Length: 311
Image (tube, rainbow, N blue to C red; front, top):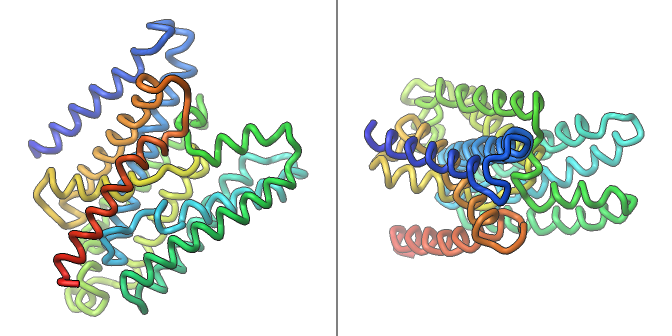
């Protein structure tokens, strides 16, 4: 409990600093329409990615599982762009983009879950990375079908930026949806946690394996798809937040680390956005600072895993 309070305090301090600081000072015309949605986007995306990473690491028994690294975000973007191109003529591009992002995340998560039951960690990891490259390449080809005046909107969504988070009722509704996803995982966290021992062991503990696995896949996919639809791909938060939460709390199980993981993910996203806004000379994708920290963290985690396995 004490660790959660410390993380919550840091999260509150970061949120206030993000809202109150900037070149325009305390101008009210900037706070509500510009800074508040950006902070809400970082909080929502960070929490969702942290929880998604935690669930995937448990479900796949893979310490390097992350929606960004494993290609879930890339497939989600590709599917969203396909839906956008198809729905553009129907007059509802945003709904189509969001629906495509969710469908792509669900399909890729389900496919990788199927593979994780039949292959070892390295095969699944390499498949996810290659899937990410392939989806990214097809996405670049599809961008050629867009008229030049629409490339700015799509480009922002492809790079990952909390500035893209929608303001007003849409943004508040998205935050409410994120809370609902996290709450659904929390209410079933013990059943999901049992999956880390394997499906047979979980069934022996009295867990409805199919229901728990379906919930884990669905929640992780919805979390990743929502993030892509709202702010674009955000890397390495889903990888780092669960490990930081385990280190902070001293616990390993999903039900014991879920809340701390969500808060740690939100704090990580806010910190990265603060670097982008206040420390860099111009606006850059939030993946720049996250990758500079997340890539070495991934190497360290891989080395620790191989060392623990004696490989």
